[in-house]
Amino acid sequence: MSTPSLLILPGDGIGPEVMAEVVRIIDWFGEKRGLKFDVTTALVGGAAYDKHGVPLSDETMAKAQEVDAVLLGAVGGPKYDVLDFSVKPERGLLRLRKEMDLFANLRPAQCFDALADFSSLKKDVVAGLDIMIVRELTSGIYFGEPRGIITEGNERVGINTQRYTESEIRRAAIAAFELAMKRNKKLCSMEKANVMESGILWRDVVTEVSADYPEVELSHMYADNGAMQLVRAPKQFDVIVTDNLFGDVLSDCAAMLTGSLGMLPSASLGAPMANGRPKAMYEPVHGSAPDIAGQGKANPIACILSFAMALRYSFDEGAEATRLEQSIENVLADGVRTADLLADEGVTPVSTSGMGDAILAALDASL
Ligand code: NAD
Ligand code: IPM
Ligand code: MN
Image (cartoon, rainbow, N blue to C red):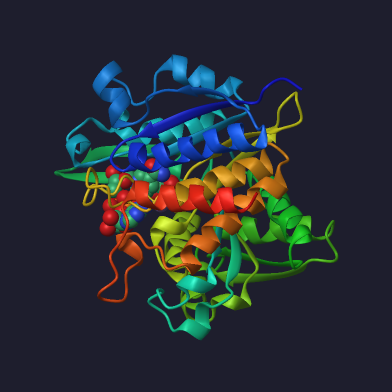
């Protein structure tokens, strides 16, 4: 097989800072494990707007369609708040998701043992937590029409539309059932079928799909209760499947179960390409963190774990993904902490690159 190709889009704010550490890890796998990648780097978000006047150029979009996987840092920042909606940094990210048709967004929330004390919840509530949120990513209220801000009488009206077709729900549900089969065969679907027709259809279609997965124990929950249950007793869940907006909110909520938003990776997957690999983009769940950008404080682990997901889901390198995840776990067990993970006074945090150094050393030690 030819050398696998990667498109790296560092983006804005802490995006380039955390991605620099991922690049060092990629280089390590090339040198030490013979895993070579053909890497292209390009602009996205505000950085692309500054250069090209758009948050994603057509050339970069075309490149994203052609490579084996895309790695994205983060987009956005206050500097771009004044821009017209159509060219805001976030539109670049949404265009990538939509045009690559990355309908299944896998957001694992795993609480590493060494961090069980760092969650804002009690240790026994989160210790050993390992859940997977499957967020539908290309439909729903993020993309539904009509949308916009119109004037009605003498006031403005903001409009967005929640819209789901059966097939959009079905393919997200199948992705979630497939994952559940590989995990603990337990799936909870979250919507608001009590108030939304799209929720009624969601529940119906997920139930239909369940007929093909008799081994999976399926439950349904209203998303507001789901948010409460995630905080009350998160270990009752294994795989959760939900729509685009609920998935956005619930995954940030799940992030805090793990200790920090700086820990959560994600994989956005689409249909298989001609080479059998899924269309894929990997990105941390967090954003560009303008409050700490440029200070070397960002935790690069979410972005590095996103590369581990790429190894597993795009490149069939599950053992190397585990090596990387285990190295991160070892570093945390040794007490290495970026500032977001500091609970104890008197512990000096490492910088973004300091965390990268520690993970590279742990990778070396794994050989
Ligand atoms: P954010 O995720 O950027 O930050 C929320 C809080 O978490 C901040 O206090 C930040 O310092 C902290 N944080 C986030 N990542 C961290 C890391 N790796 N290490 C340490 N601390 C970290 O969310 P926000 O402030 O609501 O949004 C900022 C910008 O990012 C906005 O423009 C938003 O649209 C954008 N955003 C982009 C993405 C993405 O590119 N995928 C995701 C979420 C938000
Ligand atoms: C995320 C982000 C994005 C979303 C934004 C930046 C478009 O919050 O990836 O979670 O809302 O999907
Ligand atoms: Mn989000």
